[in-house]
Length: 180
Figure (cartoon, rainbow, N blue to C red):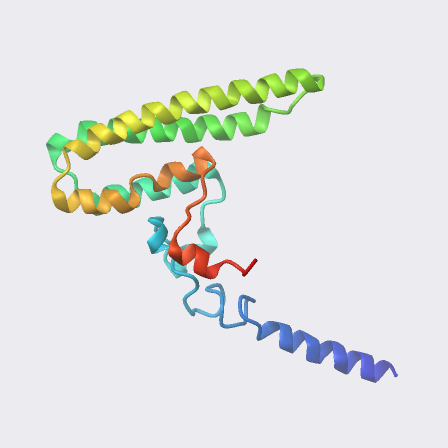
């Protein structure tokens, strides 16, 4: 009886390792080296497979990575740098603030109404930060070349999407979503 249980357990473990999306299966990128879901249609660059184990673990690190790759891909000219730096500064400022407020928003012994007021204050602050980012992004976009604008059309908002609480929705994302 014990032998049958051990054999069943070992067989189940092998089957799980072969399922898509598992570390040993065909659906993921970790461990197997096979490509996973392509997010390029979302305008969010994927990290190279050899860097995934060192993937950013904080919101700020992810935003920094997206900004760095976007800056490289835009190949900014010297006269475009001030507009880029203004955009980058505002995005990073919001990311830093987001990370800080996430840690402190619910700290302490405040009663529920005070916590709710704090959430409203955070939302108002984020709206102001988003409006500043939008203005800086539009100023940057206005001075980009047509080739740079094509890149910006796909990726300029990518570093801000998560900070704004907006999920990218596209035909690719809908195709990957389970049926309702």
